[in-house]
Length: 381
Ligand code: SAM
Ligand code: SF4
Image 1 (cartoon, rainbow, N blue to C red):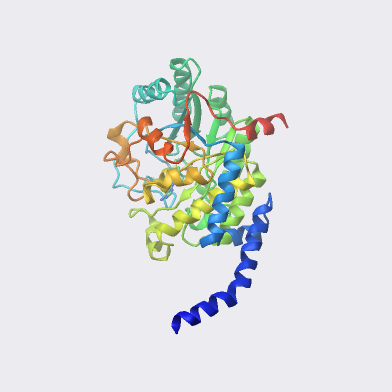
Image 2 (cartoon, rainbow, N blue to C red):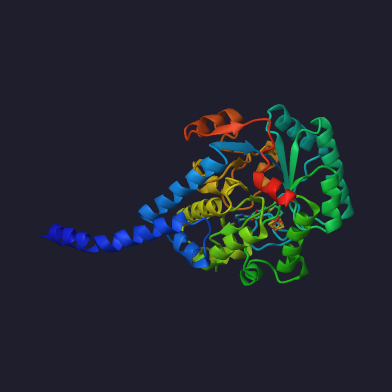
């Protein structure tokens, strides 16, 4: 009897379901989305979500191909002058052993990337603004170019700096810069940062603008699943990235860290699995909106799901950043809980990556920077 009712209900609802699916199909026919469309698509579940992922995978295949490019990631120092309330290496976390790789260690890692034909490096660290930091990065950039016959492309991700510092590094050979806006909502930004001059939303925006003016390929991104964040915030984040005309994106789930002030909101967060799924939807939507930009499959996705990077690649991401930081430091670049460290259960060697990517019919492009058609178009324009 119960089953009969279920069947009747199923058939009665059929026209409604058909309409819903139709409107998702109509939405996915569009090339650009309104904020309401984005909110709707971010809430997609079941068959609608699968349709979204199928569409973004098609766009990726058409504009990028079933390929990924590599950026060897060197997290060269966890010394930071800032106190972002979500980050495990914030200045006030005294439980952490601080480290700063030597130049030799950084150059050895760079050489490894060069010899293994990664073609690009990403240098990341805590944020310091000082002459000695500026000069050190400048000299490292020259040395990396020297040991790699100027062939290694270099992405920097070392936070907010003065325009003249960005220019100095650009002239020394860095040509990509990753600075996440974290959230495009100034109110939310002020809830997850201390309220002082060092953590100013306006300055973050100004930095992104000066990076673009100087000529860098500019990457930004947001954390997904932050306390107080709404689906509307995420829709606005996508619109921000489109309107800023970014060249690259690195976005990933927010993962709480026990030694940070935001841990007090841990009980209010979406389950990790939902933050992971929401991140996939953000990647898929941005791929449809910005067809030819570079999109990173983040380590935070892999932290939640061992196949997180592959799943991100399948629906839109095209950049993987294997960690090549010297092993002895990895445990101390602990941005969030369970970030892969020295006991790395994830084998980041190229042979392992190749095998994992082959399972999703994707190949690694060696020996090529993988700069985007998007950047070329923007530069010419
Ligand atoms: N200090 C530079 C900066 O802030 O731009 C670069 C290094 S910072 C560690 C790189 C990124 O880590 C940040 O932009 C932030 O999005 C991310 N991050 C920090 N804490 C995180 C957390 N708890 N969960 C997820 N991502 C986090
Ligand atoms: Fe420092 Fe970057 Fe962490 Fe903020 S996110 S505390 S700037 S390392």
